[in-house]
Image 1 (tube, rainbow, N blue to C red):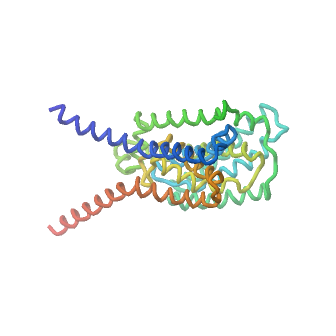
Image 2: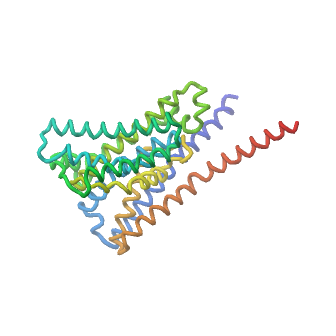
Image 3: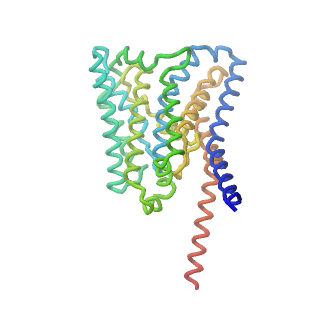
Length: 345
């Protein structure tokens, strides 16, 4: 009898793991295939210089996508991520200048993180305290942050400390050490998400907040934590973005809001909450950057890259979200019919 009961449960667990890893494996296959095809057309694609540049460009988006995954996990959106990354770059251009010494750089880093966490706190107050939807609240924050960034730096200015840049972008061969750290952190976060009670509580909050609350889950605290993680990830992404451009640019992060959502969704995150993968977000970010990176090598205009990012996001939504949306719609219809039957009787 025990065997009969455990087998369906084991099958369900295997299906869950397969569904989680399938989009990640599919993207890895596409990355290898696209890279191999591009390298046949133009061997310089696999040069150390290009591969290093590709991974460096991936790091800010990977961090932003990991942060976005944290927000999506509790069924929320943070559309202020890109503006917050820009703000972090601009603030870095004031506190991480070439004349700063070691301890001053540490204080500057803490100041930037403090700015990000303050923004995260305001977002939480607007959403949980005032009851605004996450999209409306963070959209308003996006506009405010854009305005502050332009006020502080009306045009690109303020050099970033070279020692700080070299520290962040130090590489072993063509692989930045920081990229390895990001991958390790993403794997550890996935283990926590799917192998711990804390991760289970976070997923339960996204799937059904009221049911999770009734079971004793501290949903308010988990929501706050999710937005703090998003803000912290945006600050980290802002540091790597500042290291790339080397100057306080008030518009540098504008594209990261949509691409961070795209990378998270491509990595398996659900827009309905309760599902996602941090390592999937990193692979999604790498995939999007590979798509953009190969276009010049294939003689295609870089403007098509943004179109492809949007198209790939729609494809991911259709493949990964449609079954879940359909299942929830069927549940709604069944509950509606049941309620009507009870009224009639």
